Image (cartoon, rainbow, N blue to C red; front, side):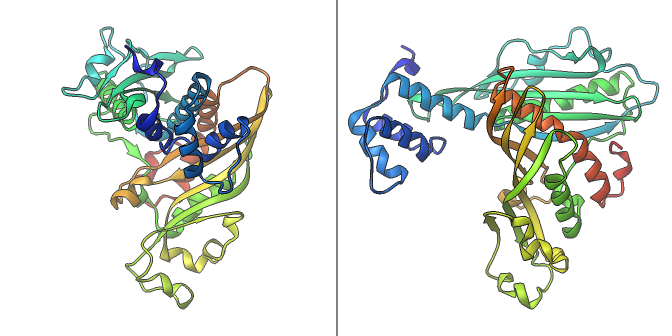
Length: 377
Protein backbone atom coordinates (compact mmCIF):
# COMPACT_ATOMS: atom_id res chain seq x y z
CA UNK A 1 0.00 0.00 0.00
CA UNK A 2 1.28 3.48 -0.88
CA UNK A 3 1.77 5.37 2.40
CA UNK A 4 1.16 8.74 0.84
CA UNK A 5 -2.57 7.89 0.71
CA UNK A 6 -2.76 7.17 4.46
CA UNK A 7 -3.63 9.81 7.05
CA UNK A 8 -0.92 10.04 9.71
CA UNK A 9 -1.90 9.89 13.38
CA UNK A 10 -0.23 9.72 16.78
CA UNK A 11 3.58 9.94 16.73
CA UNK A 12 3.69 9.91 12.91
CA UNK A 13 1.43 12.99 12.81
CA UNK A 14 3.44 14.73 15.55
CA UNK A 15 6.67 14.14 13.62
CA UNK A 16 5.09 15.40 10.41
CA UNK A 17 3.74 18.60 12.02
CA UNK A 18 7.10 19.28 13.66
CA UNK A 19 8.80 19.40 10.25
CA UNK A 20 10.69 22.67 9.84
CA UNK A 21 9.02 23.15 6.45
CA UNK A 22 5.59 23.43 8.08
CA UNK A 23 5.15 26.87 9.59
CA UNK A 24 3.24 28.22 12.56
CA UNK A 25 1.01 30.06 10.10
CA UNK A 26 0.08 26.79 8.32
CA UNK A 27 -1.09 25.20 11.58
CA UNK A 28 -2.80 28.34 12.88
CA UNK A 29 -4.89 28.53 9.69
CA UNK A 30 -6.16 24.97 10.18
CA UNK A 31 -6.92 25.40 13.88
CA UNK A 32 -8.72 28.74 13.44
CA UNK A 33 -10.92 27.29 10.71
CA UNK A 34 -12.14 24.93 13.43
CA UNK A 35 -12.94 27.86 15.71
CA UNK A 36 -10.05 27.20 18.08
CA UNK A 37 -7.83 29.99 19.40
CA UNK A 38 -4.81 29.72 21.67
CA UNK A 39 -3.28 32.18 24.14
CA UNK A 40 0.32 31.48 23.07
CA UNK A 41 0.77 32.04 19.34
CA UNK A 42 3.55 29.46 18.86
CA UNK A 43 3.85 26.34 16.73
CA UNK A 44 4.17 24.14 19.83
CA UNK A 45 0.70 25.33 20.93
CA UNK A 46 -1.03 24.00 17.80
CA UNK A 47 0.67 20.60 17.44
CA UNK A 48 -0.91 18.91 20.52
CA UNK A 49 -4.37 20.09 19.42
CA UNK A 50 -3.97 18.59 15.94
CA UNK A 51 -2.40 15.37 17.22
CA UNK A 52 -5.38 14.82 19.56
CA UNK A 53 -8.03 15.71 16.97
CA UNK A 54 -6.32 14.48 13.81
CA UNK A 55 -6.28 16.13 10.38
CA UNK A 56 -8.53 15.71 7.37
CA UNK A 57 -7.42 14.54 3.90
CA UNK A 58 -7.81 18.10 2.55
CA UNK A 59 -5.71 19.51 5.40
CA UNK A 60 -3.01 16.91 4.71
CA UNK A 61 -2.96 17.86 1.01
CA UNK A 62 -2.68 21.56 1.88
CA UNK A 63 0.21 20.98 4.32
CA UNK A 64 2.03 18.75 1.83
CA UNK A 65 1.67 21.36 -0.92
CA UNK A 66 3.06 24.10 1.34
CA UNK A 67 5.93 21.79 2.29
CA UNK A 68 6.75 21.04 -1.35
CA UNK A 69 6.78 24.74 -2.27
CA UNK A 70 9.28 25.49 0.50
CA UNK A 71 11.51 22.53 -0.41
CA UNK A 72 11.43 23.34 -4.11
CA UNK A 73 12.85 26.87 -3.98
CA UNK A 74 15.31 26.84 -6.89
CA UNK A 75 18.87 28.01 -6.26
CA UNK A 76 20.97 29.35 -9.12
CA UNK A 77 24.72 29.06 -9.80
CA UNK A 78 26.42 30.77 -12.73
CA UNK A 79 29.62 29.67 -14.45
CA UNK A 80 31.38 30.46 -17.73
CA UNK A 81 34.06 29.10 -20.02
CA UNK A 82 35.77 30.61 -23.06
CA UNK A 83 35.05 29.04 -26.45
CA UNK A 84 36.77 29.17 -29.83
CA UNK A 85 35.75 31.89 -32.29
CA UNK A 86 35.05 29.50 -35.17
CA UNK A 87 33.36 26.79 -33.09
CA UNK A 88 30.15 25.06 -34.12
CA UNK A 89 26.84 25.67 -32.37
CA UNK A 90 26.19 24.14 -28.96
CA UNK A 91 23.38 21.94 -30.28
CA UNK A 92 25.60 20.51 -33.01
CA UNK A 93 28.25 19.61 -30.41
CA UNK A 94 25.88 17.15 -28.69
CA UNK A 95 26.65 13.57 -29.82
CA UNK A 96 23.68 11.77 -31.38
CA UNK A 97 23.96 8.93 -28.87
CA UNK A 98 24.32 11.22 -25.84
CA UNK A 99 22.47 9.73 -22.86
CA UNK A 100 22.13 11.78 -19.70
CA UNK A 101 21.23 8.68 -17.66
CA UNK A 102 24.71 7.27 -18.27
CA UNK A 103 26.30 10.56 -17.22
CA UNK A 104 24.60 10.78 -13.82
CA UNK A 105 24.50 7.07 -13.04
CA UNK A 106 25.92 6.45 -9.58
CA UNK A 107 26.48 3.19 -7.75
CA UNK A 108 24.73 2.85 -4.35
CA UNK A 109 22.88 6.12 -4.92
CA UNK A 110 19.87 7.21 -2.86
CA UNK A 111 18.20 8.75 -5.92
CA UNK A 112 17.40 8.01 -9.54
CA UNK A 113 16.94 10.19 -12.61
CA UNK A 114 13.39 10.13 -13.92
CA UNK A 115 12.75 9.63 -17.62
CA UNK A 116 15.23 10.37 -20.39
CA UNK A 117 15.94 14.11 -20.31
CA UNK A 118 17.67 15.73 -23.28
CA UNK A 119 18.95 19.15 -24.29
CA UNK A 120 16.60 21.35 -26.33
CA UNK A 121 17.00 24.75 -27.93
CA UNK A 122 15.55 27.88 -26.35
CA UNK A 123 13.55 29.99 -28.83
CA UNK A 124 15.07 27.98 -31.72
CA UNK A 125 18.57 29.30 -30.91
CA UNK A 126 21.10 26.49 -31.42
CA UNK A 127 23.55 28.39 -29.21
CA UNK A 128 21.09 28.61 -26.33
CA UNK A 129 20.17 25.17 -25.00
CA UNK A 130 18.75 23.82 -21.76
CA UNK A 131 17.97 20.53 -20.09
CA UNK A 132 15.25 20.07 -17.45
CA UNK A 133 15.41 17.00 -15.24
CA UNK A 134 13.74 15.44 -12.22
CA UNK A 135 15.04 12.98 -9.67
CA UNK A 136 13.37 10.78 -7.10
CA UNK A 137 15.16 10.52 -3.77
CA UNK A 138 14.79 7.63 -1.33
CA UNK A 139 15.36 7.98 2.40
CA UNK A 140 13.97 5.14 4.49
CA UNK A 141 15.29 6.66 7.72
CA UNK A 142 12.72 9.45 7.40
CA UNK A 143 9.10 9.50 8.53
CA UNK A 144 6.26 8.00 6.53
CA UNK A 145 5.73 11.11 4.38
CA UNK A 146 9.40 11.48 3.36
CA UNK A 147 10.39 8.01 2.17
CA UNK A 148 10.42 9.32 -1.38
CA UNK A 149 10.64 12.88 -2.65
CA UNK A 150 10.94 14.37 -6.11
CA UNK A 151 13.13 17.37 -6.99
CA UNK A 152 13.80 19.25 -10.20
CA UNK A 153 16.81 20.91 -11.76
CA UNK A 154 17.93 22.67 -14.91
CA UNK A 155 21.20 23.05 -16.82
CA UNK A 156 21.46 25.86 -19.36
CA UNK A 157 24.27 26.72 -21.80
CA UNK A 158 24.31 29.94 -23.83
CA UNK A 159 26.88 31.29 -26.27
CA UNK A 160 26.34 34.91 -27.27
CA UNK A 161 27.37 36.14 -30.72
CA UNK A 162 29.23 39.18 -29.39
CA UNK A 163 31.49 37.33 -26.93
CA UNK A 164 33.73 34.28 -26.83
CA UNK A 165 32.09 33.00 -23.67
CA UNK A 166 29.67 30.20 -22.94
CA UNK A 167 27.50 31.06 -19.94
CA UNK A 168 26.48 28.07 -17.84
CA UNK A 169 23.47 28.32 -15.55
CA UNK A 170 22.69 25.58 -13.00
CA UNK A 171 19.41 25.48 -11.06
CA UNK A 172 18.78 22.99 -8.27
CA UNK A 173 16.23 22.37 -5.53
CA UNK A 174 18.17 19.86 -3.40
CA UNK A 175 21.71 18.62 -2.80
CA UNK A 176 21.00 15.70 -5.14
CA UNK A 177 19.85 17.90 -8.03
CA UNK A 178 22.89 20.12 -7.43
CA UNK A 179 25.11 17.03 -7.82
CA UNK A 180 23.29 15.95 -10.98
CA UNK A 181 23.42 19.45 -12.52
CA UNK A 182 27.16 19.71 -11.90
CA UNK A 183 27.74 16.24 -13.38
CA UNK A 184 25.80 17.14 -16.52
CA UNK A 185 27.61 20.49 -16.90
CA UNK A 186 31.05 18.91 -16.42
CA UNK A 187 30.36 16.12 -18.89
CA UNK A 188 28.94 18.46 -21.53
CA UNK A 189 32.01 20.71 -21.23
CA UNK A 190 34.11 17.61 -22.01
CA UNK A 191 31.98 17.05 -25.10
CA UNK A 192 32.53 20.68 -26.15
CA UNK A 193 36.28 20.16 -25.80
CA UNK A 194 36.09 16.93 -27.82
CA UNK A 195 34.19 18.81 -30.54
CA UNK A 196 36.81 21.58 -30.64
CA UNK A 197 34.42 24.25 -29.33
CA UNK A 198 36.54 24.79 -26.22
CA UNK A 199 40.30 24.42 -25.75
CA UNK A 200 41.38 21.50 -23.56
CA UNK A 201 43.31 23.91 -21.34
CA UNK A 202 40.32 26.13 -20.59
CA UNK A 203 38.83 25.98 -17.11
CA UNK A 204 35.34 26.83 -15.89
CA UNK A 205 35.09 30.18 -14.12
CA UNK A 206 32.81 30.45 -11.07
CA UNK A 207 31.85 33.26 -8.69
CA UNK A 208 33.76 32.46 -5.49
CA UNK A 209 33.86 34.18 -2.10
CA UNK A 210 37.65 34.54 -2.36
CA UNK A 211 37.41 36.44 -5.67
CA UNK A 212 36.69 39.69 -3.79
CA UNK A 213 38.29 41.86 -1.15
CA UNK A 214 36.10 42.53 1.90
CA UNK A 215 35.30 45.98 0.53
CA UNK A 216 34.56 44.91 -3.05
CA UNK A 217 32.37 42.03 -1.86
CA UNK A 218 30.13 44.47 0.02
CA UNK A 219 29.93 46.68 -3.08
CA UNK A 220 29.06 43.62 -5.18
CA UNK A 221 26.28 42.61 -2.78
CA UNK A 222 24.93 46.17 -2.57
CA UNK A 223 24.72 46.71 -6.31
CA UNK A 224 23.44 43.20 -7.04
CA UNK A 225 20.65 43.44 -4.46
CA UNK A 226 19.69 47.12 -4.79
CA UNK A 227 20.21 48.11 -8.43
CA UNK A 228 17.70 45.77 -10.09
CA UNK A 229 15.63 48.37 -11.90
CA UNK A 230 16.11 47.58 -15.59
CA UNK A 231 14.55 44.10 -15.74
CA UNK A 232 11.00 44.39 -14.31
CA UNK A 233 12.44 43.76 -10.84
CA UNK A 234 12.44 46.61 -8.31
CA UNK A 235 14.27 46.76 -4.98
CA UNK A 236 12.17 47.56 -1.88
CA UNK A 237 14.20 46.84 1.25
CA UNK A 238 17.11 44.86 2.75
CA UNK A 239 15.70 42.29 5.18
CA UNK A 240 18.70 40.20 6.18
CA UNK A 241 22.49 40.69 6.28
CA UNK A 242 25.05 38.09 7.33
CA UNK A 243 28.74 38.73 7.94
CA UNK A 244 31.76 37.56 9.93
CA UNK A 245 34.44 39.76 11.47
CA UNK A 246 37.77 39.41 9.70
CA UNK A 247 40.00 38.28 12.56
CA UNK A 248 43.19 38.70 10.51
CA UNK A 249 43.34 42.41 11.45
CA UNK A 250 42.74 44.64 14.48
CA UNK A 251 39.34 46.31 14.72
CA UNK A 252 38.65 50.03 15.23
CA UNK A 253 37.28 50.97 18.66
CA UNK A 254 33.63 51.27 17.62
CA UNK A 255 33.43 47.57 16.65
CA UNK A 256 36.18 46.23 18.88
CA UNK A 257 33.51 44.32 20.84
CA UNK A 258 33.30 41.93 17.87
CA UNK A 259 36.99 41.03 17.88
CA UNK A 260 36.92 37.91 20.03
CA UNK A 261 33.22 37.54 20.83
CA UNK A 262 31.53 37.25 17.44
CA UNK A 263 32.11 34.54 14.81
CA UNK A 264 29.05 35.14 12.65
CA UNK A 265 26.47 37.91 12.88
CA UNK A 266 23.08 37.83 11.16
CA UNK A 267 20.97 40.99 11.31
CA UNK A 268 17.28 40.90 10.41
CA UNK A 269 15.01 43.90 10.16
CA UNK A 270 14.24 46.88 7.93
CA UNK A 271 16.45 49.35 6.01
CA UNK A 272 19.54 47.31 6.91
CA UNK A 273 21.44 48.83 3.98
CA UNK A 274 21.45 52.08 6.01
CA UNK A 275 23.02 50.60 9.18
CA UNK A 276 26.42 51.92 10.25
CA UNK A 277 28.07 48.63 9.24
CA UNK A 278 27.22 49.45 5.63
CA UNK A 279 27.18 53.27 5.67
CA UNK A 280 30.64 53.61 7.21
CA UNK A 281 32.94 52.50 4.42
CA UNK A 282 35.97 52.55 6.70
CA UNK A 283 34.49 49.47 8.43
CA UNK A 284 34.11 47.44 5.24
CA UNK A 285 37.63 46.01 5.25
CA UNK A 286 36.93 44.42 8.65
CA UNK A 287 33.72 42.66 7.53
CA UNK A 288 33.42 39.44 5.55
CA UNK A 289 29.88 39.73 4.21
CA UNK A 290 28.46 36.41 3.03
CA UNK A 291 24.71 36.99 2.69
CA UNK A 292 22.16 39.63 1.74
CA UNK A 293 18.42 39.06 1.47
CA UNK A 294 16.13 41.74 0.08
CA UNK A 295 12.47 42.22 -0.81
CA UNK A 296 11.30 43.23 -4.29
CA UNK A 297 8.31 43.96 -6.45
CA UNK A 298 8.13 42.55 -9.97
CA UNK A 299 6.03 43.92 -12.78
CA UNK A 300 5.65 42.11 -16.11
CA UNK A 301 2.91 42.64 -18.67
CA UNK A 302 0.98 39.51 -17.64
CA UNK A 303 1.79 39.23 -13.93
CA UNK A 304 3.08 41.27 -11.03
CA UNK A 305 3.64 40.86 -7.32
CA UNK A 306 6.27 40.69 -4.58
CA UNK A 307 9.10 38.34 -3.61
CA UNK A 308 12.30 37.97 -1.60
CA UNK A 309 15.71 37.13 -3.08
CA UNK A 310 18.71 35.82 -1.14
CA UNK A 311 22.29 36.26 -2.38
CA UNK A 312 24.81 34.22 -0.41
CA UNK A 313 27.96 32.14 -0.15
CA UNK A 314 26.53 29.39 2.11
CA UNK A 315 29.62 27.19 2.25
CA UNK A 316 31.69 30.03 3.69
CA UNK A 317 29.72 29.93 6.94
CA UNK A 318 28.93 26.21 6.96
CA UNK A 319 32.42 24.96 6.05
CA UNK A 320 34.69 28.00 6.26
CA UNK A 321 35.34 27.53 2.53
CA UNK A 322 37.00 30.50 0.83
CA UNK A 323 36.07 28.95 -2.54
CA UNK A 324 32.38 28.95 -1.61
CA UNK A 325 30.24 29.56 -4.69
CA UNK A 326 27.57 32.26 -4.97
CA UNK A 327 23.99 30.95 -4.76
CA UNK A 328 20.86 32.97 -5.47
CA UNK A 329 17.45 31.87 -4.19
CA UNK A 330 13.96 33.33 -4.72
CA UNK A 331 11.27 32.82 -2.07
CA UNK A 332 7.96 34.25 -0.89
CA UNK A 333 6.49 34.87 -4.35
CA UNK A 334 3.06 36.48 -4.02
CA UNK A 335 1.00 37.54 -7.04
CA UNK A 336 -1.09 40.68 -7.15
CA UNK A 337 -2.13 39.93 -10.72
CA UNK A 338 -1.57 36.75 -12.73
CA UNK A 339 -3.27 36.80 -16.13
CA UNK A 340 -1.55 33.70 -17.54
CA UNK A 341 -1.71 31.47 -14.47
CA UNK A 342 2.09 31.13 -14.25
CA UNK A 343 3.10 28.90 -11.32
CA UNK A 344 5.25 30.08 -8.41
CA UNK A 345 8.04 27.69 -9.45
CA UNK A 346 8.10 29.05 -13.00
CA UNK A 347 7.96 32.61 -11.69
CA UNK A 348 11.04 31.95 -9.54
CA UNK A 349 12.93 30.72 -12.61
CA UNK A 350 11.92 33.84 -14.53
CA UNK A 351 13.16 36.09 -11.73
CA UNK A 352 16.44 34.19 -11.41
CA UNK A 353 17.00 34.62 -15.14
CA UNK A 354 16.51 38.38 -14.75
CA UNK A 355 19.59 38.49 -12.52
CA UNK A 356 22.00 36.64 -14.82
CA UNK A 357 23.34 39.54 -16.86
CA UNK A 358 23.75 42.02 -14.00
CA UNK A 359 25.38 39.37 -11.81
CA UNK A 360 28.10 38.70 -14.37
CA UNK A 361 28.60 42.38 -15.16
CA UNK A 362 28.98 43.26 -11.48
CA UNK A 363 31.32 40.32 -10.93
CA UNK A 364 33.53 41.62 -13.71
CA UNK A 365 33.46 45.06 -12.08
CA UNK A 366 34.23 44.07 -8.49
CA UNK A 367 36.20 40.83 -8.64
CA UNK A 368 39.92 41.08 -8.00
CA UNK A 369 41.08 37.84 -9.65
CA UNK A 370 43.62 38.06 -12.45
CA UNK A 371 41.60 36.16 -15.01
CA UNK A 372 38.51 38.35 -14.75
CA UNK A 373 38.72 39.24 -18.45
CA UNK A 374 37.64 35.70 -19.29
CA UNK A 375 34.19 36.34 -17.87
CA UNK A 376 31.24 37.61 -19.94
CA UNK A 377 31.23 41.27 -20.78
